[in-house]
Length: 536
Image (cartoon, rainbow, N blue to C red; front, top):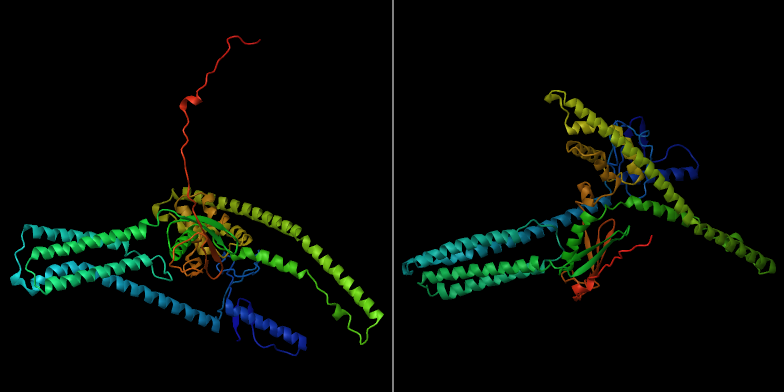
C-alpha cells in the first residue's frame, strides 16, 4: 500500500525504493518503507502550530517515546492526509456492530415482554368488571353502595400498583448482563401464572355460568389487585432488601499495576456482584495508564539484552579427528564462556542501583516541572484577577466571559502544563479542549489555582476524564462457577477488558461473638490525701 502525506515544507513518500544501490541498502530501505506503511495503517499523528499547544489529543499507546521539547518541534499542517483501514480493522468494526445489534435486540425483546405482561396485569381487573356488562347485562343485579365503594378501592389500588411497578421495574438499565436476573424472571413467571389462574377460574365459574352477583365479581377483581400488591412487596424484598446486609468482603485487584480496593457486598449473584464492583471501580480506582508500565518493560528488556550466551562449538569448529589439542581448546573455551556469563550475571545483580538512580532522577524532574507549573498557574490566575478588577470599571457590554478569559491565559501556562503531563505520562488523558473547559469552569466559580491543578497533579478516577476513556469499554466476566449462582467463600472471578483485568476474591465476613463485661462503678473511686506539712 502506497500512501502520501503532505505537510508544510515536507513531503513523505512510502513505496518502492528508487535508484541504484547495493543489495544490503535496498533491503534496509524496503524494511523502512514497510515499517512506515504499517505505522500509517495504525494511526496518523499531526502536530499543531506552537500558538495552539495540543496537550495529548492523540492517545499514547504502547511504548512511544515523547519529545519533551515539543514547543520547538511542532509543524503547522497545510495539506491533507489519507487514512486507510486494514482488513483487521474492518473485521473488528463488523464484530462490534454485530455485538451492539445483538445487545439492542435482546434489550428491546425484554422490554417488549415486560410491557405485554404489564398490560395483562393492569387490564385483567378492569376486564373482570367490564365483561359482564357486555355479555349478559340484563341478568346482572344492581350495584349497591358497597359495590360502588369497591370501584374507588380498585381505582386507587391500581394507581398505587402502577407507580410501584414503574419505580421498581421500569428504571433505566445500568448494564447489559450475560445472563438473566433469576429473581426478576421468577417474579415475572409467578405473576404470569397467577394472572392465568385467575382468568381460568373467572372463565369457568363466572363466564360459563353467567353469574348474576355483580358485587361478588367486583370483589373478585379487588382480590386480584390485592394479590398483585403482595407480589410487588415480595419483589421489593427479593430485589432490594435482601442484598442490603453485607455478608461478603471482596478484594478487587487490577492485574497491571496491582491497585487494590476492598468492598462489602450482600447476597448477590456473581454477575450482579461484578456489576456492583464495576460501578465502584469507575469511582474509586485511578484511571488506568499503560504508559506508566512502559518504563519497567524497557528496563527489563535492557537488562535481558545485557546477558550474552556464547556457543563454544561455533567459536571452535569440530576437527575431523579427536586429539589432545582439541580437548584443551574446548576446555579453555568453556572456562572463558563461564567467566563471561558470570560477569554478565554480576552486572544484572547491580541493576537495583540503576533503578534507584533512575527513579531518583525521575522524581527530581517531576518536582522541578511541578514547581514550574504551579508558578505559571498562579501567575495566570493573578492575571485573571487583575482582568476582573479592570472589567468592573467597564460598561456591562464589554465584560469578558469565562471562556474567553480561559483562552486568553491558557497559552501562558500551556507549555509548563504540557511538560509536566508528559513527564508524568498523563498527556493522553487530557486534551487541550478539556483543559480549557476546566479552566473556564474554575474561573466562573472563582476557584483557586490549587483547585485547578488538583485534577492534573494527582490521577483521578476514570469518570473524571472524557467519555472516550470509559464509555465504549466492554467487560468480559470469567468465572468457573455459573454467573447466576450466589457468592460463596473463596469464589474467584475475573473481569477482563482490552487492556487489563480485575481479579476479584470473595471472603465471607466472619461470625462475630460479642459479650458484655460489667464493671462496678465503685471500683473506679479513689481518695487523694494531701499532707498539710511540706518539706522546705
